[in-house]
Image (cartoon, rainbow, N blue to C red):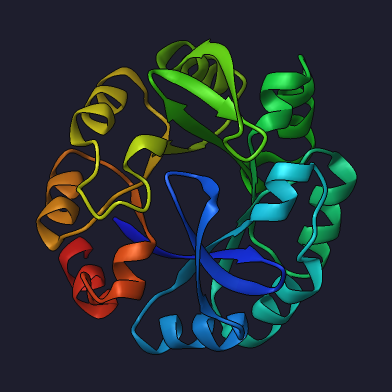
Length: 237
Protein backbone atom coordinates (compact mmCIF):
# COMPACT_ATOMS: atom_id res chain seq x y z
CA UNK A 1 0.00 0.00 0.00
CA UNK A 2 1.33 3.41 -0.98
CA UNK A 3 1.35 6.26 1.52
CA UNK A 4 0.60 9.68 0.05
CA UNK A 5 1.50 12.56 2.36
CA UNK A 6 -0.72 15.50 1.49
CA UNK A 7 -0.03 19.12 0.70
CA UNK A 8 -3.14 21.30 0.54
CA UNK A 9 -2.35 24.66 -1.07
CA UNK A 10 -4.06 27.99 -0.47
CA UNK A 11 -2.46 31.26 -1.59
CA UNK A 12 0.84 29.42 -2.02
CA UNK A 13 0.90 28.11 1.55
CA UNK A 14 0.52 24.63 3.06
CA UNK A 15 -2.76 24.56 4.96
CA UNK A 16 -5.33 22.16 6.38
CA UNK A 17 -9.08 22.63 6.54
CA UNK A 18 -11.42 21.21 9.14
CA UNK A 19 -14.09 19.08 7.43
CA UNK A 20 -13.56 21.02 4.22
CA UNK A 21 -14.50 24.36 5.79
CA UNK A 22 -12.52 27.24 4.28
CA UNK A 23 -13.35 29.31 7.37
CA UNK A 24 -11.52 26.77 9.56
CA UNK A 25 -8.07 26.85 8.00
CA UNK A 26 -4.69 26.32 9.68
CA UNK A 27 -1.47 27.39 7.93
CA UNK A 28 1.45 24.98 8.49
CA UNK A 29 4.10 26.31 6.12
CA UNK A 30 4.75 29.07 3.62
CA UNK A 31 7.30 26.91 1.78
CA UNK A 32 5.55 23.95 0.11
CA UNK A 33 8.65 22.72 -1.78
CA UNK A 34 10.51 22.33 1.52
CA UNK A 35 7.59 20.36 2.95
CA UNK A 36 7.72 18.02 -0.06
CA UNK A 37 11.47 17.56 0.37
CA UNK A 38 10.84 16.56 3.98
CA UNK A 39 8.44 13.89 2.80
CA UNK A 40 11.11 12.51 0.46
CA UNK A 41 13.66 12.42 3.26
CA UNK A 42 11.20 10.44 5.40
CA UNK A 43 10.98 7.78 2.68
CA UNK A 44 7.91 8.84 0.69
CA UNK A 45 7.78 8.11 -3.02
CA UNK A 46 4.65 10.12 -3.79
CA UNK A 47 2.81 13.25 -2.71
CA UNK A 48 -0.86 14.19 -2.97
CA UNK A 49 -1.44 17.88 -3.72
CA UNK A 50 -4.76 19.72 -3.64
CA UNK A 51 -5.15 23.23 -5.01
CA UNK A 52 -7.91 24.38 -2.67
CA UNK A 53 -8.57 27.60 -4.53
CA UNK A 54 -8.70 25.66 -7.76
CA UNK A 55 -11.19 23.20 -6.29
CA UNK A 56 -13.47 25.97 -5.09
CA UNK A 57 -13.17 28.36 -8.04
CA UNK A 58 -12.77 25.93 -10.94
CA UNK A 59 -9.35 26.95 -12.24
CA UNK A 60 -5.80 26.29 -11.02
CA UNK A 61 -4.45 28.96 -8.67
CA UNK A 62 -1.21 27.37 -7.43
CA UNK A 63 0.27 26.08 -10.70
CA UNK A 64 3.66 27.75 -10.21
CA UNK A 65 4.02 26.38 -6.68
CA UNK A 66 3.17 22.89 -7.89
CA UNK A 67 5.69 23.25 -10.70
CA UNK A 68 8.40 24.03 -8.13
CA UNK A 69 7.40 21.01 -6.04
CA UNK A 70 7.61 18.72 -9.08
CA UNK A 71 10.98 20.12 -10.09
CA UNK A 72 12.57 19.99 -6.66
CA UNK A 73 11.04 17.18 -4.64
CA UNK A 74 11.93 13.98 -6.52
CA UNK A 75 8.45 12.65 -5.70
CA UNK A 76 5.70 11.27 -7.89
CA UNK A 77 3.13 14.05 -7.78
CA UNK A 78 -0.63 13.69 -8.11
CA UNK A 79 -2.73 16.86 -8.21
CA UNK A 80 -6.39 17.68 -7.74
CA UNK A 81 -8.36 20.89 -7.51
CA UNK A 82 -9.61 22.82 -10.52
CA UNK A 83 -8.69 20.08 -13.00
CA UNK A 84 -11.70 20.45 -15.28
CA UNK A 85 -10.42 20.35 -18.85
CA UNK A 86 -8.09 18.41 -21.12
CA UNK A 87 -6.00 21.56 -21.54
CA UNK A 88 -5.32 21.82 -17.81
CA UNK A 89 -4.46 18.12 -17.61
CA UNK A 90 -1.94 18.53 -20.43
CA UNK A 91 -0.38 21.60 -18.80
CA UNK A 92 0.20 19.66 -15.59
CA UNK A 93 1.54 16.60 -17.39
CA UNK A 94 3.93 18.81 -19.33
CA UNK A 95 5.58 20.00 -16.09
CA UNK A 96 5.99 16.43 -14.81
CA UNK A 97 2.90 15.78 -12.71
CA UNK A 98 2.26 12.01 -12.81
CA UNK A 99 -1.49 11.92 -12.21
CA UNK A 100 -4.37 14.38 -12.27
CA UNK A 101 -7.44 13.96 -10.11
CA UNK A 102 -10.88 14.80 -11.47
CA UNK A 103 -13.89 15.58 -9.31
CA UNK A 104 -16.40 18.29 -10.08
CA UNK A 105 -16.07 17.98 -13.87
CA UNK A 106 -17.01 14.29 -13.70
CA UNK A 107 -20.30 15.19 -12.03
CA UNK A 108 -21.14 18.39 -13.89
CA UNK A 109 -20.20 17.40 -17.46
CA UNK A 110 -21.76 14.15 -18.77
CA UNK A 111 -19.46 12.24 -21.10
CA UNK A 112 -16.39 14.21 -20.01
CA UNK A 113 -14.81 11.37 -18.08
CA UNK A 114 -14.87 8.79 -20.86
CA UNK A 115 -13.26 11.21 -23.31
CA UNK A 116 -10.56 12.13 -20.80
CA UNK A 117 -9.78 8.47 -20.06
CA UNK A 118 -9.52 7.75 -23.79
CA UNK A 119 -7.00 10.57 -24.13
CA UNK A 120 -4.96 10.31 -20.95
CA UNK A 121 -5.50 6.76 -19.62
CA UNK A 122 -3.86 6.00 -16.27
CA UNK A 123 -2.69 9.61 -15.91
CA UNK A 124 -6.13 10.51 -14.56
CA UNK A 125 -7.90 9.42 -11.39
CA UNK A 126 -11.26 10.38 -9.92
CA UNK A 127 -11.97 11.74 -6.48
CA UNK A 128 -15.17 10.73 -4.72
CA UNK A 129 -15.64 13.21 -1.87
CA UNK A 130 -18.41 11.88 0.30
CA UNK A 131 -20.77 13.71 2.64
CA UNK A 132 -23.81 11.98 4.15
CA UNK A 133 -23.55 9.24 1.53
CA UNK A 134 -23.51 11.59 -1.47
CA UNK A 135 -20.79 13.08 -3.67
CA UNK A 136 -19.71 16.66 -2.88
CA UNK A 137 -18.32 18.99 -5.56
CA UNK A 138 -16.75 22.45 -6.02
CA UNK A 139 -14.24 22.11 -3.22
CA UNK A 140 -16.80 20.35 -1.02
CA UNK A 141 -19.04 23.44 -1.04
CA UNK A 142 -21.97 21.77 -2.86
CA UNK A 143 -23.65 18.38 -2.50
CA UNK A 144 -24.76 16.48 -5.61
CA UNK A 145 -27.59 13.94 -5.80
CA UNK A 146 -25.18 11.09 -6.65
CA UNK A 147 -24.84 8.31 -4.09
CA UNK A 148 -21.35 7.04 -3.41
CA UNK A 149 -21.66 3.49 -4.73
CA UNK A 150 -23.52 4.48 -7.88
CA UNK A 151 -20.94 7.15 -8.63
CA UNK A 152 -17.99 4.86 -8.00
CA UNK A 153 -19.43 2.09 -10.18
CA UNK A 154 -19.93 4.59 -13.01
CA UNK A 155 -16.34 5.77 -12.63
CA UNK A 156 -15.07 2.21 -12.87
CA UNK A 157 -17.29 1.54 -15.87
CA UNK A 158 -15.77 4.59 -17.62
CA UNK A 159 -12.36 2.92 -17.50
CA UNK A 160 -10.78 4.82 -14.63
CA UNK A 161 -8.09 2.78 -12.87
CA UNK A 162 -7.74 4.72 -9.60
CA UNK A 163 -10.38 6.10 -7.22
CA UNK A 164 -9.60 8.44 -4.33
CA UNK A 165 -12.34 8.45 -1.72
CA UNK A 166 -12.62 10.99 1.09
CA UNK A 167 -15.17 10.96 3.88
CA UNK A 168 -15.51 14.71 4.43
CA UNK A 169 -17.07 14.23 7.85
CA UNK A 170 -13.79 12.72 9.06
CA UNK A 171 -11.35 15.04 7.33
CA UNK A 172 -9.14 17.18 9.56
CA UNK A 173 -10.66 15.99 12.83
CA UNK A 174 -8.04 13.44 13.94
CA UNK A 175 -10.93 11.23 14.97
CA UNK A 176 -10.21 8.19 12.81
CA UNK A 177 -11.16 7.25 9.28
CA UNK A 178 -14.24 5.50 7.91
CA UNK A 179 -12.91 1.94 7.69
CA UNK A 180 -16.34 0.47 6.87
CA UNK A 181 -16.71 2.71 3.83
CA UNK A 182 -13.40 1.55 2.35
CA UNK A 183 -14.12 -2.08 3.12
CA UNK A 184 -17.46 -1.75 1.32
CA UNK A 185 -15.87 -0.07 -1.68
CA UNK A 186 -13.21 -2.79 -1.86
CA UNK A 187 -15.92 -5.45 -1.94
CA UNK A 188 -17.86 -3.64 -4.67
CA UNK A 189 -15.07 -2.40 -6.94
CA UNK A 190 -12.06 -3.89 -8.70
CA UNK A 191 -10.16 -0.64 -9.39
CA UNK A 192 -7.43 0.75 -7.15
CA UNK A 193 -8.76 2.61 -4.10
CA UNK A 194 -6.92 5.32 -2.19
CA UNK A 195 -8.39 6.15 1.22
CA UNK A 196 -8.43 9.71 2.53
CA UNK A 197 -9.88 11.60 5.46
CA UNK A 198 -9.23 11.32 9.18
CA UNK A 199 -6.48 8.68 9.22
CA UNK A 200 -4.93 9.21 12.64
CA UNK A 201 -3.03 6.10 13.72
CA UNK A 202 -0.80 3.34 12.43
CA UNK A 203 -3.44 0.78 13.35
CA UNK A 204 -5.77 2.28 10.75
CA UNK A 205 -3.05 2.01 8.12
CA UNK A 206 -2.54 -1.68 8.82
CA UNK A 207 -6.32 -2.25 8.82
CA UNK A 208 -6.68 -0.54 5.45
CA UNK A 209 -3.80 -2.59 4.10
CA UNK A 210 -5.41 -5.84 5.28
CA UNK A 211 -8.66 -4.74 3.64
CA UNK A 212 -6.90 -4.55 0.29
CA UNK A 213 -6.85 -0.76 -0.03
CA UNK A 214 -4.15 0.35 -2.44
CA UNK A 215 -3.14 3.68 -0.92
CA UNK A 216 -3.74 6.05 1.97
CA UNK A 217 -3.51 9.84 2.05
CA UNK A 218 -2.18 11.34 5.27
CA UNK A 219 -2.84 14.97 6.06
CA UNK A 220 -3.39 16.66 9.37
CA UNK A 221 -2.05 13.75 11.41
CA UNK A 222 1.36 14.31 9.83
CA UNK A 223 1.41 18.01 10.57
CA UNK A 224 0.34 17.59 14.18
CA UNK A 225 2.75 14.73 14.84
CA UNK A 226 0.05 12.15 15.50
CA UNK A 227 1.61 9.97 12.80
CA UNK A 228 5.28 9.71 11.89
CA UNK A 229 5.59 9.46 8.12
CA UNK A 230 8.49 6.99 8.13
CA UNK A 231 6.56 4.73 10.54
CA UNK A 232 3.45 4.98 8.39
CA UNK A 233 5.40 3.98 5.29
CA UNK A 234 6.86 1.01 7.16
CA UNK A 235 3.39 -0.07 8.36
CA UNK A 236 2.05 0.10 4.83
CA UNK A 237 4.95 -1.72 3.22
